[in-house]
Structures are given as structure tokens and as C-alpha cells.
Length: 209
Image (tube, rainbow, N blue to C red; front, top):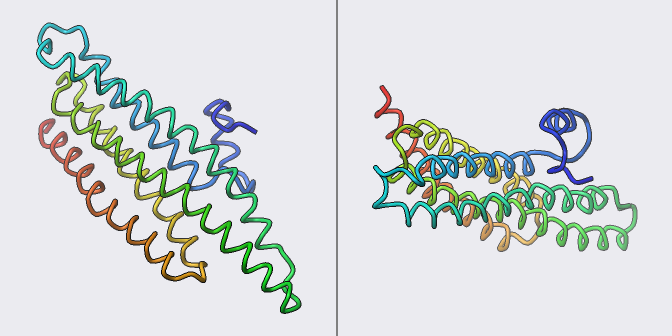
């Protein structure tokens, strides 16, 4: 099933069901794509306006980046669902004998890595989105500044949401060196880009009140 081809109603319905996918990772990727699209909208409302002629080239370049990030985040909605199936099957593998347990552990390590790679990729794209949204907020039409704030809020939420899918998978890894490396990478992205998203939101909020 292609989850990004579903209607909004259908996606929310399957998300609310007991179906194993989509879950938090896919939902985070979708929220990130929506946040990026809102930033892109700020750009769309800025292009062609005489008042912003001096930044028009910058805005057009930002919109091109935003188009690509929207597409990549939507692809990660599907990718997250696809990587969960082998993980789900691995948890169900027999472990009655030492041989079965050894085989299960080997498979688990491989699928846990993949299941961590995807939310890390979602986080990376959210970081890129936050960078673009920052510029849209600075250079875009003031008439759409509230949308820039919502965009930053969504991108920050998607970043943090995806991190939880990293942490829940690295927690089960036996390779603790790899697990801690993944955790550190996620921690660093939250520390820097979560703060940057919060700053955009706070500045927008202050300007509106």
C-alpha cells in the first residue's frame, strides 16, 4: 500500500487502527512534509510582489529546495512503513535453541539498524527543512509570517517525533557502540535544530502579539 496516495481521511483512519504501519515515524515524516509545504507557501505568496523584489531570487531558490524536501519527506513516510515489516517478523522468530537465538539476534541487529536509519534520515530532512523555513520567515511576506511559525513548529515536532523512533530501536541493539553513535547523532540534531525551530516560532509569536 502506498500510504502517501491515501486521502487525509484514509491516512488518519489507518493511523488510528491497530495496523502496524504507518506509525510514529511515518507520521513524523508526513508532519515534516506538511511543515515544509507551509514554508513553501510563504515563498509562493512572496514571489512576484514588488515589495520583495530584492529577495525574489533567494525565495525562488528556497522554493526549489522546499519542493525537493517535501518530496523526500513523503518518500520517507513509505520507507518507514517498509522497514518496519522485517523488524516485526524478526521479533517473531523462534528462540527456543541456542542456534535459533543466535540467528534471531543476527537478524535483529540488521533490521534494527535499518529501522534506525530511516528515522535518522527523517530527522536530517527536518533539519534541512528548518534551515529553509528560517529563511522564509526572514525574507518572506509578512502577511504569511504566521504560516512560517506553523511551519517551524511542525518541522520541530517532526524532528523530535522521529527521534523517538531512533531511540526505541537503538535501545534494543546489542551493538552498543553503534547504538550510542546513533543516539548522539539524534541528540545533536535535536539540540541544534530543535532550538532553531523553537526560535523561529518564538520570534513569530512575539511579532504577532
